[in-house]
Length: 360
Image (cartoon, rainbow, N blue to C red; front, top):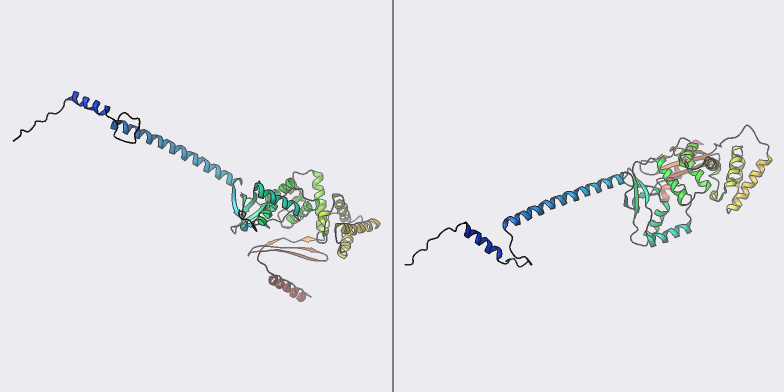
């Protein structure tokens, strides 16, 4: 029977020698290249703690950066400086009465070609509406260009837009007019017309206030001319067929005749004429002006003509707007509402006819 060997605990010097022997051995980890020795467990723990500390600092830095970016985005959004993609179908382009009466087709085609080649350089401006849609403030031509491109091309169903926060009607109209004045000047008649329309909607207390607010950056002389064209639209707007072709000189001459009491003569001349173009229309006006010059002036008459009355525009509960203009020779009803067909309009006309027959 073999004798059992007695075990003797190593002393401190032997333990130290063992540690040195282990340190001299190569690493058993095949992925640790270039490492001569395996680190002691204390060293590994220290490095792990250090890495965790660095990761915590990095996380805090990233969190602070994200929070700062979020605050900047929120501030930009509140200021209406954040761009978002909005579907064309959700934008009401008739939210405001447009200052520009017609779009130049050649200029629009140039804009479409530019958007195709270089993209949209400037987003449109919208405001949020109560029904969840958006009202167009500025960018009518850009929106029209996107709508046409969307008919036969992909990628144009949404348009970049600035969402303006808390914009009242007066501010919205000022923004629209300022943009058009900068990008493509309005005609003299368009300036006067929009002042009359927004005053008729109750956005401003009077045409004078509308002109002074909408064209605040213009000189006093220019605002005076706008008021003159506003008088032309009030007195003759429902009869003029080519008002945008009217020169500034012609408009001021007509406004002077209206203030002198010549509205009835001008309305009679335009109401009985059937001009094919702007030149024929101007000949009719010139003949009426010549008649007025030959007629002794009534000094008791003057001031802004008031025979054409703009009624307050009503917002319909089911969506849309209803307004009207009353003149000595008739009434013009302006109904803006989506999804109206011919049958609906026929029923409206029948209702008006029945009412007038009952009154008669």
